[in-house]
Image 1: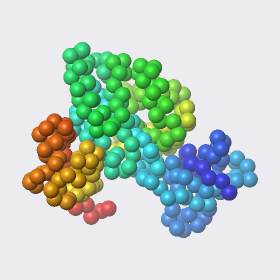
Image 2: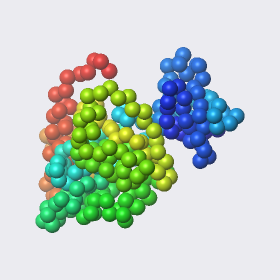
Image 3: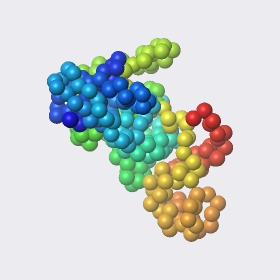
Image 4: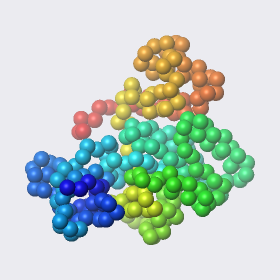
Amino acid sequence: MKTGIIQQSLSGFYDVIADEKIYRTRARGNFRQRKIKPVVGDHVEFSAENQQEGYLLKILPRRNQLVRPPVANVDMAVVVTSAKEPAFSANLLDRQLIALEAQDVTPLIYFSKTDLLTDEEYQQLLLTIEGYRKIGYQVYAAREPFNPDQLANLMEELKGNIVTMMGQTGAGKSTLLNHLAPQLKLATGEISQALQRGRHTTRKVSLLDVNGALIADTPGFSSYETFDMTVNDLPHLFPEMAKISAACKFRGCLHIKEPQCAVKEAVNNGIIMKSRYDDYLQFHELIANQKPNYKK
């Protein structure tokens, strides 16, 4: 018996990476009976006489599972964030970050289009970036967005991890993927995206071994458009608030109207970014007013 990671699934076959080899496997019949569907990224136990005829025996517990792209056990997500065209939105970035925190995925923030900024705009952006770095987020924002040193640093960080890309339309996810993995030759630009959107293209997701990182070949992750967490979960998804909240007077403080709140004090003293706190209040409001989803 061997253990490995499902690298792609195709018409009932699962290609599993183990010991730097790829084994083609099928799922045992009892998987279907038990309604277990193997997913790309799953850690599995399998048996194989050779690289062409293996059988999946067991799916090991998943740490997380994304819907788009359908990948399990994602360790890191590169949040491709446009500095200009479309303009940088802290609110959108914070939505993406809390969605990743909720899934226990480590975010890496990568600013694209920094070369389109004036020197003054770039200096302004650096102040914001400093705020995110203080929280503990890794941020890539070189003046030349695809600077070789920056790409090499990012690759080093991704090595040994299962990775996906996310970001708004037009942020440059495909362009970054192409720089990291030129063999992809992904179609970039809005036209190809617009053409794809209307079609029911069930693209298979594969994990590409790029210098030791397994990167999903399809950018995705749109669950930052919905807020699946509760108002009580939300404060834990802002690491800088979670760190300080032990000093709040009330346990379970939501950092809104409560007196002697350490988080509000930190915002007033410039320790917590005001833009982050404003987004926290907005997200709290959105979650509190959400109608329950009975279709889940």
